[in-house]
Image 1 (cartoon, rainbow, N blue to C red):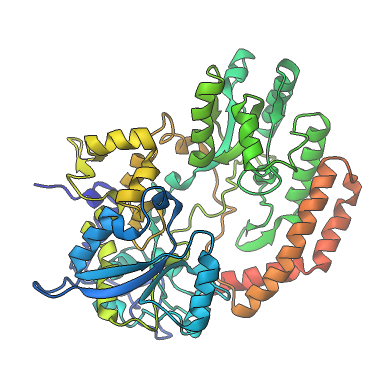
Image 2: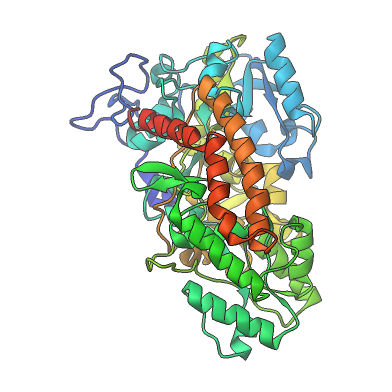
Length: 550
């Protein structure tokens, strides 16, 4: 019997088998005020492939506006050339005309399109970035509400919402509007697999530590001692970082139970500048910088200059991402400094003895991205059929791995593996590069469920798949759910946070580097409050209350 790739993962195997659950109430297919995001409808259809087209029907022609993601742009000029999208058209009886804006002009073209109301049938977009949020996109008559259509028009998505109520809650707005066929992180659906979403963390020169008989440091004091030993024994930059972004020095603030920006502080939201922990982190950085343990040029570093320093063998420790940093750096070091062992390490424990992740979105199932149906759609039934297929067993496999026998197969251990031909191509060019040509759905926030087995397929560098057991050995207590401010709140928030962030980055950088004394820290906080920071926190907590009431 041919195995179903989706059912290899325990977190996915039951998603479409549950037709009813005793005691459930509410309905994700209803927009009535009594709908409960925590209790979707128990009437999910048992169909796997959804509402398939009748045999012999002429394909329905529809249009989709979509930016061309960077992974696919390496090899194709349109998603029409992607194998899985061709097969998706065949399976659903829908012929797609793709509208790809020029690279670099995506936002401009999107805004012009929405303003002119010259809309395609569907739009693939990050709706969390729409001015005022996705609810505003509905109010602006750009996209339609799907609540009353999903039960009959999208049985596969309906079944997933029924099986995973938290996925439904994250896919709707505070007004309980379902606005898109969402991308969903499969690893985030279950506690035991969410660890795979921990793809950011620290890494250090283990070969240097081994030479000095230093075991992996697990506390901030042990980090300090190792960095000091690096400085004393090697001509190096003990700890390098950037001022902002994924490699920011401020990622280490998580050790004090805070994040630099917004974070969960118990059951409420707080901001780093308003917490004692952030002040403690700044003082620690002042001390480390004065000792010469931190890159003196960290404020001027960007991603490229940081990479150059690390891959030249100059840096002892940094914090960054898995694929974009660690794997990339290791591959270069193999050529530039062959003896280097850049090893991932645990997030450090702070004063309370707990290690926290600085990655605030590890528990986000839906991220606001997806394919939405516009108010100008010429055939809503066909659009629903086309998009819902991506949540069926067959559709998830197709959009994550491609075509069985062509791009993937099931091995003797019942695991998804690339075919020998594709494996050779991925070894030469990289997995993301190749999947962009054959099956980009799981790596691009397309309307589907990112299957857990895809993670193992894409994390192929030695140690890459296992490193989440180290970076994921943390508390997620600081992580926030995906929130949606109102239109008015979004405007107010943007004005406050843009001003506060610019000011904070400048002043905290000066304090750390000794250009402004630490005694001025409280004045910095007072200035941020005068800019409205406490009002911004109140807005976030209002959005949190609405999210909890979904």
